[in-house]
Image (tube, rainbow, N blue to C red; front, side, top):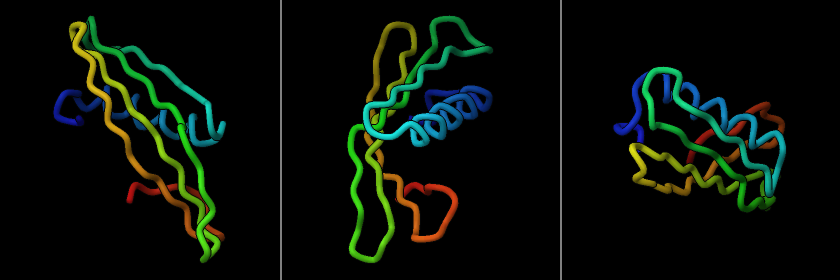
Amino acid sequence: MLKLLDCKEQQQAAKATDQAERGGVGTEVSWTSETRPNVSGSSKVTGEEQLADGSQCMTVSDVVIVDGEETTVPKKMCRAKGASGYVKV
């Protein structure tokens, strides 16, 4: 999906994912490209689980729309016990 986005848009998408993670399940954060018309997207937290080792994982669905064509990519983000942020796994 990242190949569909320019560098600035990738940063916007990453920021949306970070904001959605903080909100938890059901939180959706949308963005609109600052560099190209007709490019937008969103990140939505669709699931969350606690693993036996104490780490937490979330399922995030990223949507990118370029000239009306929508691409959806689910990803799993996990945070180790005691860690401050989530990383893609």
